[in-house]
Image (cartoon, rainbow, N blue to C red):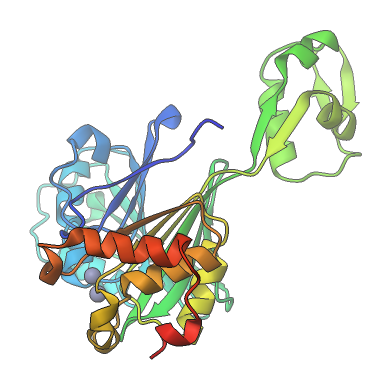
Amino acid sequence: MKSFFHPRLVNDRFDDPSVFVEIPWEHRAVLLDLGLNYHLPPKKLLRVTDALVSHAHMDHFIGFDHLLRLRLPHDRPLRLFGPDGITTRVASKLAGYTWNVVDSYPFSLEVIEIVSDRLKHTRMSARDGFVAIPAGERADGSDVKTVFRDELITVRASLLDHKTPCAAYSLTERLRVNINRDALDRAGLPRGDWLRCLKEKVRAGEPDESEIEVPGRGRLRLGELRQAIVSVNPGQKIAYVVDTVFDEENARRILELAEEADVFFCEARFLDRDADRARSTHHLTARQAGWLARRANVKRLEVFHFSPRYEREPEALHQEAVQAFQGEEVHPEMLWK
Ligand SMILES: [Zn+2]
Ligand SMILES: [Zn+2]
């Protein structure tokens, strides 16, 4: 299956965490966390439509300034997601600069703050000096919330405990809907814009009885078209988890969020021999990351955000994670010690 998302770590596994997820066919990208991102070519950063921030510890948020600076003269808006307090933090960063000559800049920002029982939207634009304008709230008390959806992607988030709320994210391609060209020709149906409309109706799960206008053929039933010329497959999924303590509640939320992911980016800050340190700093060990990947039944695990104490033995972190992911299963009690 052709990959829809092309994800890659922005930095070395010991450096600031950030994953750049490109959607090449759409000239679009999503950034998971805003660690330092100077290494990314500006043309790549200009494609970012959504920045999903886990929390505002410096190593996860310092790249906001670089992204902002590049984006100022451009009109593509940016959505920025983050946990409790993110709106104030973004506004405070913006308040740290002088904006007396930006009224010709078209850049605007929408901040979506994820709190335990709701999502809060705020707009800020360069034209009016980034004054924060509330743009609505939506109640949502679920553990895994759908925080954004458009015709291409769905973003879900869950708040984890890192002594401060830390958002984990999943990014899912909407249902992959393809038209079988041979079947289309055999049925004598025309090509054209109506196929786009057909795909959207299939993605939206509209009922078989709904109809669609086909040029030269009048109104045809969706169910018949779906059966004759459409193939539907689940889309690709990426999950991203950083900076969290390993406990029952966090594990439950992570497993729900990351279930069946194609690629699971998970922090592995410590080795199991330093599990006490992981617990006291609210981080995961490589063994815990591997166990989570196994239980979530993901296809590929990428561990990162390594502590500098292992700079001479990065392989030990990889091996411990792989062992727990694909080797003999570790009993969960071994991880809670
Ligand atoms: Zn942190
Ligand atoms: Zn961190």
